[in-house]
Length: 403
Length: 223
Image 1 (cartoon, chains in turn purple, red):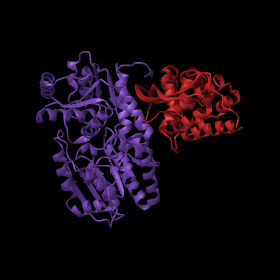
Image 2 (cartoon, chains in turn yellow, red):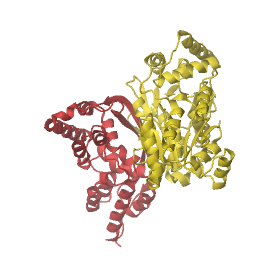
Image 3 (cartoon, helix red, strand yellow):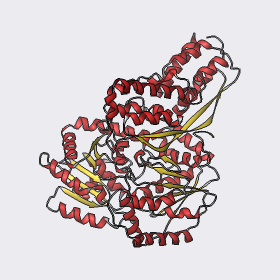
Image 4 (cartoon, chains in turn purple, blue):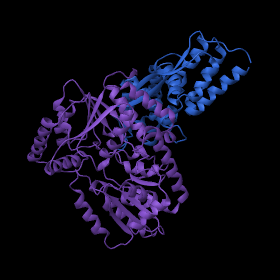
């Protein structure tokens, strides 16, 4: 695991000095993070990197998991989809499953932090244990047009928190509690983002029978309908009519995502007849994901809904040209025609991919601009700084705070 | 080289880090934008007229305030955008005065172009009002003369330069930037103070601004 000093060559000494200063201001406070899974998905990934770095900066950050069976995670997956605006049948029994598991967790979970940092809806009901400590709910989901029934159900919990955190401005609503904008981030020194040698990249390509003789279009995502892998295949087929190319669809499934297997089957079925389509199940193989991104000519993120879309930041950090949907946090990362291309449809995405494959200089420039934008705004050091300021804001309600 | 004057009061460098607070308020037309600009907290006006300075420290196509960007890119009102973009922020001593100028600019435009009030942003592209929450932190750098001042200025974070030049003058309503105030009041060098005040910081990127100030002071020391 990288030490905080190792980020100095990437972000500069002064950024690290600021982090140390903020760490001192939080000395003595215990920050208790709670979510539902230690592996799979963006939340676990960020916490895995962030907790050790916060500790190194002198912040006593800890991490606990709630418990839940497959029925509970089935319901929270429905919540997740419904909050993203997808139509879902949620029965009274489903709500009861959620509440029963929540009651079990309320009973069993030890709450010891000065600041309790709850990630996503699964552990949201723990707020019932609130006493004189501070509580933050971190919503990683695109709630720009949530299913009103589920939102109303969660509302009673949300209003009891001290602060809410969203990843993009369009997720905000008029709320009776303070709400902050904190974008997630990537770690430039993690296995998923660190520099790789040509040999390392080639060995991964060889393992999966991918050659470099044709352009490679890649989407790295969990196999999830909201990431629209079927739409990516349609884009690829439209491009393939004019430009001989390959497609890689690679990703894993998170422990709290029971739908993943079904989507993967559908994708594999659709990809059967074409040897240039590579469907790869890579649960938690970060080096391989890194290698595939670096080997790609173009990276896509054709999500229908997106919390933030960290795979876009990962691709841009590798200076890759990206074609992505204009949803969730993606437009914060891509300024259209400057640091990537945004699209709204399969046809639009196919046109953008063809344009970039035929204009490599333009594609290169978009990738370079994207890398600098990520360096300035979406690396883990900025994220840690925002979180430390967020913790301090719980004790200071003014717009200008003198520390 | 003349002997350096020692300051009556030393200068302590501060730095400023910020967090963005969401308000849930959004506008989909110029009229709604105007109505909300009139009533949102000053911290919102500050955020949308200064955010770009810190987020874009390299060349980028962003215009210098969020209001201008939105009316141009989302509503297609390029002329209003230009009017908002060219507001001379440096001449205003308070957020209230800056807000009044922005309001007057939009009102004048709507009066001359009533049809602009009929344009709606796409449902997914409204203007989202946000606030800047600033955390001001003292650094360990304290200086007593111009030579020491330059030494620190060369290595201090751009957040610190940002705080002393922009935030302190407008948001904390100190009338002028902290550097000019100290040079005039504690070193008694009004000419140098004025020269730094005359820089329009809104047309520089922060690194360029650092270099411009250093150059002016070095020239003064050598004179």
